[in-house]
Length: 467
Image (tube, rainbow, N blue to C red):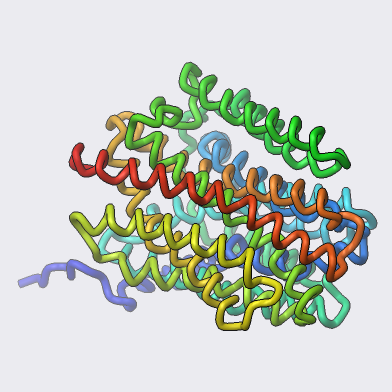
């Protein structure tokens, strides 16, 4: 009598039939994307001092995130053209090229161009890694595979700041990108050897007009920090936000769409869920972009120490997400509300303690920010996916990522504009760092408050619809 396969595969089952090398390849691909933001956040003060780029802190993050948005929206098109093996290898090679541009950059503009290329390559790489998991591993092993992928984000919070901090404190920030060049090329070569070619599907369309509007909108917001005056900056930020709203309206009528049709309707679960995600990301980005620089300038922290303080947020996100992953029923809505409140409290607390508060209060602010996303993200994803029509389920999975990335890019750009209006662009001093901390988080608080409002409206509506 043949024994039935276990309902949940063991680790031996995960790695059986020659899958060990493929598993390592996928983990390395996810690592590249997971560690990038923490490494870059840690070394940006050194980059600014070396390349004269203090005015462009927000651009370095916004450009990477915009590249990831483009990648997410065009991943289906690329795999349809080339198949999984070549798409995976090309994205890893492109990521390496972006890292090389940043590592060898003679000026801030080349560095920013490298960050944009890294965003496209890394965004594709993360997406194709998820596709590879579905193709290469039996269903019974998927819980363990995804648990390993989630754990990699936790590893990145420990190793990412260490890598960036060691290189920055030694005066060799370029070497941090050099290490990623080597890893990316290794992934590209291994993909050609280990991954199946896969049949080419019919190439999907790319929502070019919507992506252009998003790119121009975020760029307008980022450009506001160069205006040198409050009113001109306010006008440009308003134009940028207006273009983002217009992209929603255009998308709803487009033949090739980026988002579900109800995304711009705040009377629906879909619209409220996506709005909450966008607002939470936008409100919190000041911590990732400016936290390390502010801590180094005002508290005298080394790049390594400052990087680990920011890494607390990412670690808390992972820890709380795992802690609440088994909750069901009414607890889903409670976690969404608790998450929005937690993230908002973290933003407000940062305004008061980032510069002068005791270390425990600084760590608490980081934990509250991370916990906000860890408590709520998975449940908001479930609500949005359950609320859309069946024919939009596939589109909605990608749309969630696009909205989060766009919110993060917009938040980074707005934080940059606010920081430069407070003198950050003229140089990193204790005075400009103090002013930046108060302004960035003080103005982020109302955005965070709006996310509480949308979360409070979302949860009863989702419960009423049984989603």
